[in-house]
Length: 367
Image (tube, rainbow, N blue to C red; front, side, top):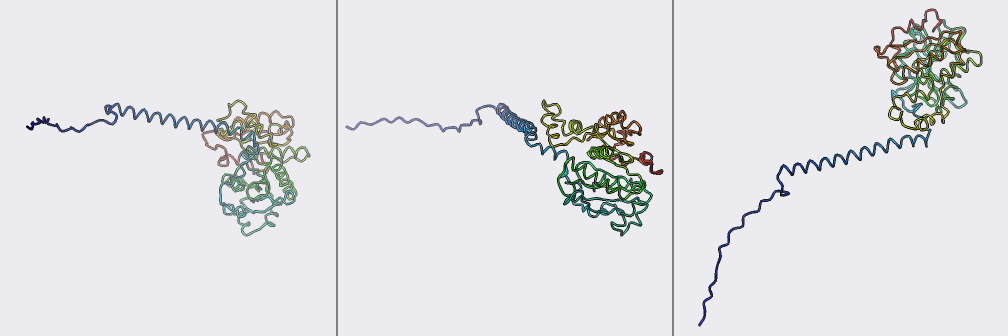
């Protein structure tokens, strides 16, 4: 007989869905982990950034030491042409409607650009006139200022143009030029070349002047050129009628060490070896503190207390050296400070309403 198989059946309960958190942790703990990960990423990013800054910081002195010509470019900054897009052939575009542009050759094949601004009293007569007329005005009863500009820019820089206007309004002829390598002048810059250019322009002027005074005005780096020039003139027995130094320094090493750009490296061991020696390796000294001991003409120093480029204390130091110079013992050495409250800084002394009194153009004796 067939036997019946008893099959046992069991009810199968439905499987409930499994609900799990992302990590099996409470939400608050997950947020803490996420925040920690973000902190790790931030620390990693900052570490890389600091490492990059450190590499750059260390690399710059090494690069300058290996390529000292870089430091020379930073001293001259002749490649920084501000303002851009101005035509130096047309000074009238800068508001100088009584100024003539021309070119001279201090050396064969080397052309430098020059501006001659006549006294403001002549501006009407100057309209439509060209070089020969401007040349003839040197015989007029007006003194002449040879202006030597600083680094960067050109003879058409705005603060320079404003000074020309002020000096012209005071009855001066103003002659200025771009050193070799600046503006539209040929060649490459060097301290010797800049000084030679200035000497050439000075001699060119003396050939055209009768007995009217010829003053030399240097600004910033141009003060170094100016003292170089005047030392040479005094050495040959033909000093100028006066030397005016606006925002001067003692020598290029002290100026470079005091310049804002050097702040991040100033206290670095070997700063002089890395940076300053690289300057002198290019035969750049601009040793005004030495030059004033060989100068024999009146000296006027103008300096703003809030000068952020050439510190006020360097101008004051140069004045003290000049005032004790034996070669200057028979000449007036005058220092005019301008209060920080006036905000003249490095290049706005031309705004001073006291300039007419300081320069005394009325009697044509100058500083």
